[in-house]
Length: 587
Image (tube, one colour):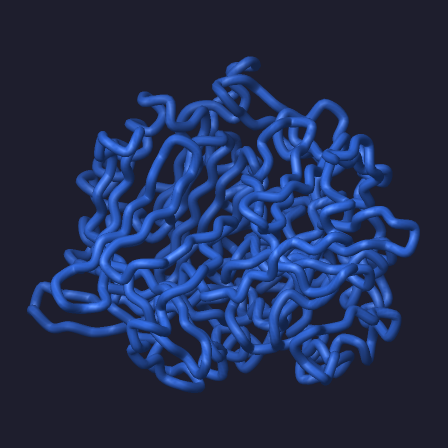
């Protein structure tokens, strides 16, 4: 044990050396990788970026590009600290699995067993049980977000979050569709608090950060500066268990190596091998609807990759990871256990989007002469019920398409109008497949994609799918809705509202909801809601479907859909955790 501890200490001292950069890769590999990231900096796609590559239990390459703080002329390095956003969810999931390993809880239980005051109801399921395992894979049916307080100088308490959910309703049936839920992971933070006996932050530090030697990693303290519109900005705090971790590529490499080594790091067991295997197991096969892009594991995304080796042999392996994005920072990590390789990429700029998969594929191509590509995984074939081709008359109707409503009144051609742009869908040949192009002013074609759109029927629902022209993977993008015309009770509520319970965001230049406003309006007989933050970077107006005189639901399918607009007993509106009071009537 002493020998192992000494090894860990020596390794950490070596990695903590000033601006230490690991480099045991071929010159060609280094040249290709550095060229890619230097180009991003030169073209002002990012102010600062850092990367690290691990292979067979070692960091084989790490580097920084640009600046971590341009004004102070501090260059980005492998030790620079970045916000990692939703990568935090991998740590939240691992913490729950460790608590299960220690017999403190069971992921098979409904979360209400541990948080009985959670009483959110559902219009879809007669059983209101919300299972921990479903929250971990974003399939519980909980709302996507509670925007109020998600980013704030004074973060909401877990009790406030529970109360906020109790004022809403479930966004979809259980195991209907994987719909990303920050609200769900907020509950998991409270669960860790209760069953560990310490705070979420204390538990993560003691059980994960410290054993892994992630000494430069913190949660919502020492938030690094970032860059938006080429100006330095300071983000506010974010709810800890959904996106509050700040880390470096060196620290993240240690986490990746532990996952590859099935729970061990520097010969120390962090969690058991079975716990890592449980975390990595894909759990999407029981869904009513399934996309092809990635499978969901606990706090991880799963993708299939095909390897073409120099001997012309082909092999399919699993790739795991998670990405994280705040309004400013972008982060991504990927690893392939079977190859014992992994990468992490971090960026401090709003436009500095990162892709760990590309870095991983480039490394294996130039370092090991292995060509990797995403496999065409047909996950939709694992749905509870396979999709069928609907009849033409079944297709006619209105669809929730993201925040918009699309009217399909002609099989040959239909369109979606977004401001000055028309998104036009045209039937291809004699099939029920469509091409899509974007036109400006109904004349100039700005974009025409190779993607194909098609209508399918699953059980009794008619849905619109997109088939990627690049990967041939299929995604649900629209859902036929029986829209109800706006009623008199809702007409009386049309107008503008202001939030009376918004959490402070100081002078944050992005995602600043400290002075949120809401507008409820009617468009062609349909109810629409527009939420606007102080920073003016909010979402487009969202179409609602009226459920009853006191509730209406966002239409569409997937992310940013399914949230309810509720009418409270005092007549105020409740939406995304905000209570809104009327300021001006539209009548």
